[in-house]
Image (tube, rainbow, N blue to C red; front, side):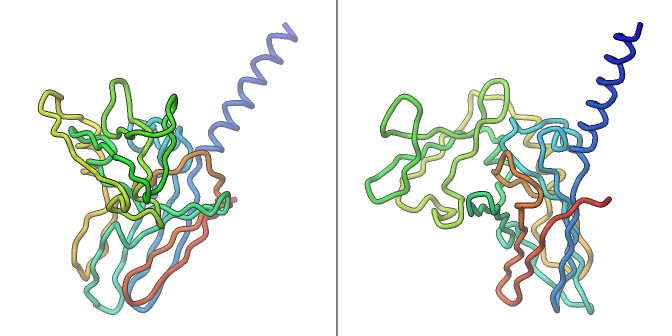
Length: 222
């Protein structure tokens, strides 16, 4: 009986610990034009709670609210946001839903002057992205800051997925994504960053429009 009770207690402790790990972290920043509040979902479990999918464990999701100040009209664009990690200095812009779960596949053909992306089992060759059977593939890296959002140094070709059924996940990602708009009213939604296995303390969100940058560090409420 004592062994059984101890086992149940251990399960309860593990469950509570897991619940603690999925608790989102918060950040806030402002400039003369906007106030931004951000909620970070960095673990696959936390991502699954808000999307119904963990995106293969390859993405970090940030929920944003962008509130214009003083009646100003601002342009809201996903490309104004960058997520940086202190772990290795990597920076990445968010992916569009079609890049994560779209019907088309993206092929990156490497050239000598372009960034090198290792392919298992070969020293060179194309990298495939887009939907795969059973889940979300690892994200391609051309949208990393420094490599260029348009796959600089590489030839990118989109292949239509006419034989593939529409992915319900893409529809969900579109419905929940931060809208790209020009507005003087608060807007909110999600952004999907291709980063994985990151600690909250290492992550920094940057909002970098043309006028005034905001840098935000995440922390968990106690």
